[in-house]
Length: 385
Image 1 (cartoon, one colour):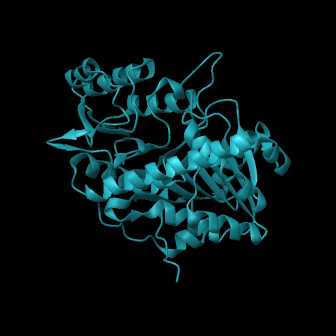
Image 2 (image 1 turned 90 degrees about the vertical axis):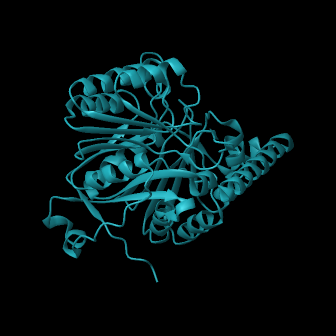
């Protein structure tokens, strides 16, 4: 029996791309804040983007806004001590999540991987975009391709409380009450947008994102389009995609032609032949590094956030996505994905066979085995924490 999903509400939801689109919105959110800001991110760099963000947050503090900055200790390990001193001196409340060395223990397991900016419990950005120049390049260079969602409305109260719990290390909130069935079933009679805040945190039994994505693929009627920057599907995901294709659902996956983690790219290539055999269309993005994490099912359901389709996101990281069920928003996402695919290299059976010489196949296989071992090791460490 399929578990019934309880949804929440948003008054405004917009797709946001990396680059000026994201950072101008972030600057606006910080600049308009009046009471409290939470910024939680995996990578916070002290490059020009990071330093400008510190300046914006410091200005908010001077206006009387309480600013809480939570970064992952591993993801942001290159952040200099003098930058941290500057952050703290400016009045920003600062913490590192899961320091690598705590007491006499080393922590390599559970990581804070989500990226959230929220102000005054009213407006938020949720996605996969870190605070780093790579996501905010201008001129000749283009930013890494990534996405976030800009959201306002009742859901922001839920987002804010989740961030507060992580900040204060008090665990998780109880589930919010379900909204009325009339909201879910009468899209044409209400102005609110149906959304659901989803989390994955295996250590605390949170599997909302992975369950939501698999459930949506299993019930897909016409199409599934997936942006997979570090795409290494497990058995359940592969089965869901295969069965969807068998039902004549058009399955398309946008993959990284260029990647910042080459061993994962090669490990992903290990599955190309299987995916193509199952009539799944593959598109490689070669213009910039692909870092996006997004899936659209049947045009009107979208999930965007920090969750990658791999075991690290499923078992080892704190991830947050926002599921959106709305035709208007779905149309904007569909238009963006079609634009991206039009600029991609389409990978065919013949093209993949040309690539798959013995040396290349060994590289793909050995990369897959290496990544699988690292995932197993990470899982073993996490299980002991």
